Length: 408
Length: 164
Image (cartoon, rainbow over all chains, first blue to last red; front, side, top):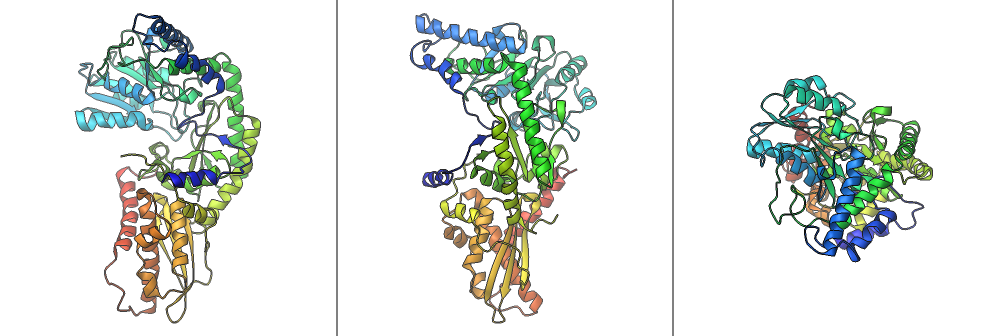
């Protein structure tokens, strides 16, 4: 099988340019971030931050300074409100399980939305199927916006936790997250309000201390930081317990040795976004619109998934190409140097296409032909021009293979 | 459940890039479709059959992934100048072997291709009004699987309330 991959990679030789848009699933790490991390692998801070020697104290200093930075960017009260975890997956598990299974919370109901990322969806389903919790999903409109009235109705005295992603990772919908937290807490002040903030961090401004949000999942790779690190904002006083046992660490909620270099990289990637926030935002928004408009104008039978304009995450592009199967299109685009992902069942390796696209009313055929892309501060106008050059011929070729099989 | 990688082999990639016998056949003797757009997996086969029951030309169209495209394409090559009886006897396993193997999660692509071909052959004899002895009355494994995939699409629509 590995020989096959070698051949597949070789098939890409001679492509004119490479543009990577699959930030949803993994990302490259810029040189500045690597350079910030390097000393912590080799020359300083390689010790355990809980121990009494110089490399340990250096590690502790680096971790605390990183937490301070991130705390500042999201309006956390202090660096202790940031718990570093090995990634978003772990942070989401800590948030949902640490406030139900291990916290002694009496509430038996979990409220999420119909368009929660699978990370949260699967945990909520596990809690329902294996541990007897009741999971309720709040419906959304055709732009992916949650129904706040339904939320108000569903949050009751039985509810333990409400979890709604602030920005939808697939279709880019920016939820009225502060309002949702207000509504939920007004209905029951004892609930924990969690948001998967992975796609919002570095894309929208928030001051978490001034909201009713208790927990927020943070992502490193989605802002071009290293993989293998993420975080959970935990508002002071929130009832949450750790979900893994092990060596007691400097962080109360996550055992094991802190990964200092990755934490430093996460903070550096944050700094590169936030210290130039408005400029970065204007740049990605401009490229996003150029990519969306260019595709919709040039290629017939295309649909934008998710809202337009300011309700949409500044980096998110999600378009359905009708009469076009998504996995085939991702391969065709890859052979031309444009790297994207699809919400098709084949790409997901599941029998169903993206539940998020189905929830906003897309037909299965429309979901199978969906392509997801995210632009970053490092993309250029030329990258977008190249993608717009490549897309029409790629779509045309796949549609030619489909022919009359799927009638218009 | 795991999300296995999909290291398609060079033969699959080649047929994906340059599919043989692609396209609608205007003068086809018979054509048949298998699969469902809801599953993102659908194949149409076109056959030009001589009066002696030999496949003179075969072509396909595919709404599906790279494996779907490649298996359909290779099957049209395998059945060229074969009698309908010979074409009927080709199994999904032979198609998969011919293409140099597929990741297990893509086996159903080969199954669907054979299902579509057999559906076309059955249709041909049904239209002619005489069923040869070698043609089994009951649906074969591949034909059943194609049906099952089509049924699954219907069930999925029901279960999740279907596309709005």
